[in-house]
Image (cartoon, rainbow, N blue to C red; front, side):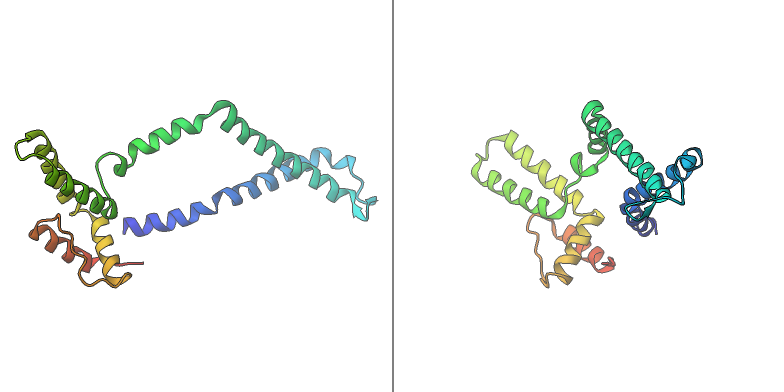
Length: 184
């Protein structure tokens, strides 16, 4: 339920920038119009267009330019978005402890190659490989891996996406979770 709500919320946010710009322009233009309307005689025309429309267009254009100038100042002069991106990265679980399934498969293949190329006596390499195996096993129990498995089966049409690096029990759990996933 929470994920469905967040998906709809995200869809609404996609149009928020354009709608908000239209609201800014419309609201500020109409708020300023009573103070400057006496300068624009509605009975006069310029290029066949009433001076009232020229006045409204001038105010709207000025508001648009000021908002863009403010955005440019925020971006170029202040650079606050850099800190925002740092915080976003810190809060993203896929940059800290989670791995998505396609990346996990590549990591498992690299781990397998490292394990085969290393000396059996090199305890540090084997310890590292064991950690990667445990990490991938934990990630395989996350919902995103079940979604990937479901997609491989339904969208790609692969009946048996075999993940060699997972234990038999983890693979069974993943397939069971993939069957329960509702793909949209």
